[in-house]
Length: 395
Image (tube, rainbow, N blue to C red; front, side, top):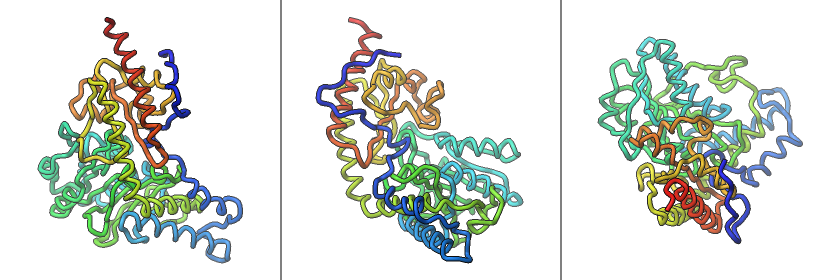
């Protein structure tokens, strides 16, 4: 492990630049949850007394708040434990329910592992899987997508915002293609909620995965949007009690549901102003780092969310760079795969060589990021990158 450099004079304490991995729980969200941990304890499924009624009312109010952020009807929101479960329920549920019509699934090489691993499991069970490449900017070619759909294609799954590089896919256009061909479209929107406007009243999307902990809510709670008109049917993956209209059994955690609802309500109210502020900080961070020279921004420069920067540094590996930044919390990839030693599958799909992919760093900012933290991060990076480059290319 590289020896840590001295802290930047006057810099704040440890700087959190890993909002893409998880976000802090907003204090207002914590406050909304506390009564359902300390005072109210009823089971939302207990319909015979006031304890259960109050819990059920809280859960339904939260369901409506989640639906409002994405332009859905509350009845289209199914509670899950998070986006990974939502992805599994969407892919496996759709393919199993439509087994008689076809067994072909289309997805993209840059998807989150929750989608890719679920797709591979379906392939092991006899489904046919097509994995589509992306362009060098991380975007999916619509005509390439259209050509991949077949008469037996049941479902296509495309991530709205990539978790590693922050690139936004045009799911409206892709959904229109799916509608023409009678194919269901699933969208993983875990990294999108609160970062860009989503309107499922208008978008031709059939299934959408959501989670709370990327939007300043608690971990362990998420949702799957399941369209009602035209009605989408999927097979349940968890059984035992018939909760959530039979799609996802299990006693609902009222406090978690309330927390996700409050987080999504805050996002709906504050998203425009927050995104404008983050875009300003993002550009300040990018310009400061690019001044180093030998820095590559991975993914489309413009079609991206305002909180994400994925950068490759010439002459520097990502892991030693991370280890030389004790004052900055960042990542060399997604939180779900950062412990693995192989290069990022997302960056390799963009055409980066292994050494370029290894030299990458993901910096993600958020609601509580300050200008002072951005400037200190730039200073930390300048110091570390120059030091590491000097070791590799001594004068």
